[in-house]
Length: 162
Image (cartoon, rainbow, N blue to C red; front, side, top):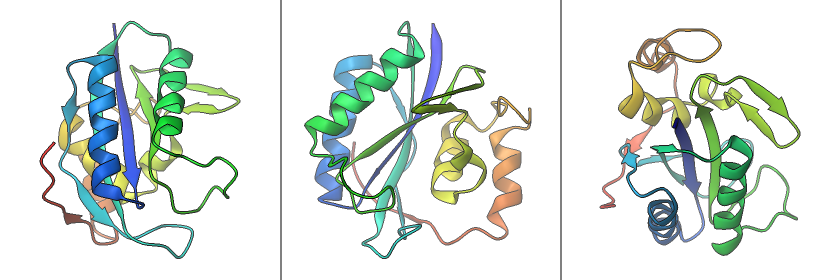
């Protein structure tokens, strides 16, 4: 059984799409842990604010099968893959970690580099997995967040009942 952490983000119909994505994750993976939801500015392009959170769950699926499930959920919720990488989107699901795996294959890089660079990824990850070590640095997510928080852009808690 592998422990997986996934980031969820949306800035198009964001409350609806986040709820739908969480419901679909529950259908596929049953028991999931959820971080608080954060409202954060778009990064890399000029767009509406995103809602971001992290979910954690255990699975027997291989990492490529988990990625396929996420891809299918994104498609089901209206993700347009013809748009640029940095663009508005109804939903974005990214595998952040898969146990302590380090992997770099086409389409999947684990751990996701965004963990160390984006507050909207690291903060919710440390909220539900603060004592877990980053697979490459070995430092806890809580320690990594403590360092990043000093210079991180503002993240506002968003009251969304999931």
